Length: 211
Image (cartoon, rainbow, N blue to C red):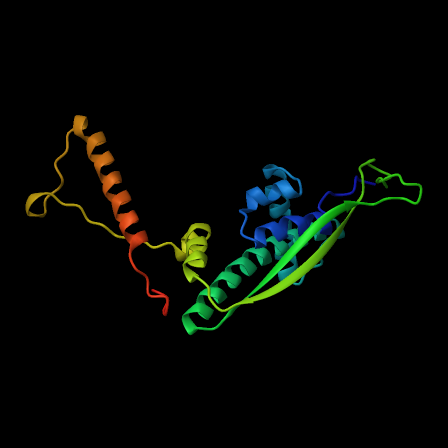
């Protein structure tokens, strides 16, 4: 009989909870804790199990934890996106925003004799997780905070793309020399940085979401 997998529902939930709160998936792994290599191995096995499940094929029992892992982290990413999109939409419609805060704490399991319970196979201390939820309603909310988070954590969907065309005299190519390329590149970086500051400080109409 093989060694039991570390991919347990409790470990999966710890990672998924942090990812749902906006922490990047690789940073969320530290709450497992598992390493990056283990994560990608589990994702690969989980995707293979999902492919079997989607095709109507039976999924081996040994692969089901990894299928659950993939589903959980994908669901967490969707929940984060959905939460912030709703806040932006509520702000655009003038509706008050409702914030639900979930806090999870881990406490060691204590036996009647006062000693901490340990896993009989690994000898590791056993923990129990307690989750509390708090709901708060706010009449005012700055949707820019959610927009900022989405732009930086979901760049492929929400980052603003600016197409720029650079030409020389009469529409020709920009004339540069090998010695001047670095200087020209640094000047371009400075120009873009100045534009970013200007865009950030520009007044924003809180009544509508800019496209």
